[in-house]
Image 1 (tube, rainbow, N blue to C red):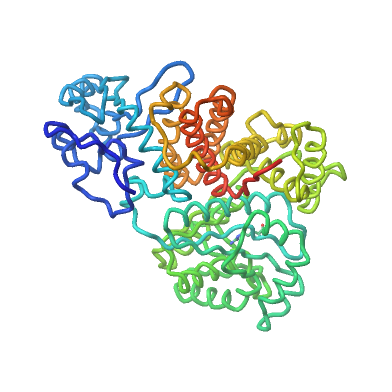
Image 2: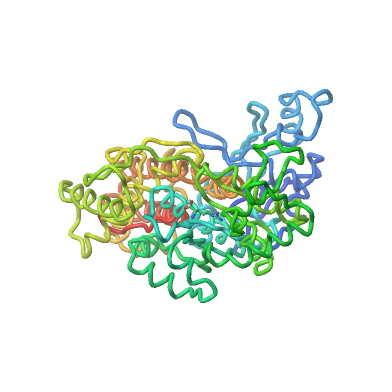
Length: 549
Ligand code: ARG
């Protein structure tokens, strides 16, 4: 994009860089960009990038746009030599002068706050959101230093012979989200569905194993259906039975390294404590010489390393398997595979009380049916519901959004109590609300057309509501960054819910219909930017935004 900044006066501090998330143009990190600021403050540029963040909007007061957090600049100092952050903040602020980009510099609790020239903020944010489209926030400086990695995400992984249950549903939507996010950030992602097929006919196929068999099975399954709405796909379907023979090689390897111990029962174990602590003993072979779940996971991990040479491998399962994965990773480690430390288990909690009208136990087909029928009923009862071409499809998309948001709101590790009524509230913090907001914004664009969209007058967007929205849009990259670091979708969810609340308020007050063309046009730009970021965020979460409902 063409840079929209006004040329700074020669004496300026070039605080332009403060517009971190939005002035990035996809170039590799240019160390000069923070140089001037870094020189004035006598701080290394890398530290500045991490310590400057957009200020979260607040209901009560007008906030600055960016803040430099003194505490995070000092993070490596030990406590004794740590200077008072407030004093430091004041000292730093004194070194800085306003310029044509930064209109106000103040200090807060341990922060130096910056207010950006309002019109510049407006123009730059909106242009960037609109020009970057689906890439908005992803090209930020926050990610520019990160090398592209090969990431394997193993998720879903149901047991073919048994029913797909709520835990697998959670694994599917969480894994899909992680894979979407990492891929969007430029990493090379391999998605694996590791089917538990043990004990069924697939296992007996042995060497005659054929992927085709799995896919056929899956196609007649509501699972396939789920994957297609959610837009979930896999690069590899493998199964436990596939590793039957390779498990034997693993056993031989363990034996050759002196790690395998035979028990009196004829089973074989690996003693991870080295001193017989029963809680750290892992059984890897049955009495009849066949492998166990853990052995097959060892074989699968080694095979994936050979195949993909991954930098990170993430397993998404319920927290009940925590110990299992700890043991698998530890065994890989003592077998001499240093890359074991690249393996990571992402555990999630239990969903309680997910019952459908048909009965107590909830399986995938029941959940999907329930979602569809409840949503169709909801939609029929609401006056504002539009005539839809495909009401079934809309019901499903809105319903899945509801399910995903409910699931992603809290920490993944927490158990939560499921409630259909809460999930489907249209006004609360739900996926229905996100979809509704998206549909409303879309219809705004449809009604008023794109005639206004060539240019806009920034002076028309200086009211507090518009500014709050712009400030919120400014934080999208930080939120993506957080979720990518801790693998928790809740940061993105709460961001999108706030965005939707802001949009709902603005929709009431920032009228378009009876406003002069210039004002209407500028507002349409703003709403269009909101819809774009909302849609981007929803898609990352695995939600297909609807345009009508
Ligand atoms: N199929 C297993 C289950 O349903 C989950 C597999 C998890 N992945 C793994 N590599 N062990 O419990």
